[in-house]
Image (cartoon, rainbow, N blue to C red):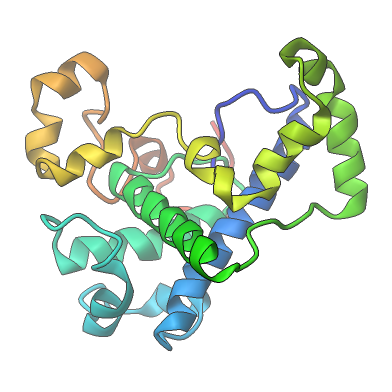
Length: 217
């Protein structure tokens, strides 16, 4: 699932409910794009050739920087499905964050044009529990628990909720290797030394990849 670093509730169990909910909604956006171009189901991507042209020209080309290859764009998208489905709290790679941002922005633009729904509520039991945990944070922030929870329920807020920064947009200006070796990266630490275009260094510690049987260190 997607690791979120903004203050959630401070209750680890409740925070994971929020992270899982948002991850499921992001998977829904990915499936929405596949549906738009009749590209099948997310589960079918796991055995797909990363050089698949249909996936690239229908979906991943439009949500990836121009300087990224077909294979890299597809691999990032395919592995993003596994990341979001995982029980681990994980960070996407810089390219995966770029793709997520484009998916979110694209759907928000569509919603503004067509009136498509952007809000989905937590199941009632989870929602009441989250609202309870948000009461103190809301008082400190001079807002209501409802104001905060709506940031997790409304995709219109996900361009802020899902990212700690927008450094990934630098991929529009330079390719991954140039960005990785840049003075800006040395100063800001946007890309870790072990990180690849398609995989955050955090994930490399799992020798068998991302799956539900891995235990965190």
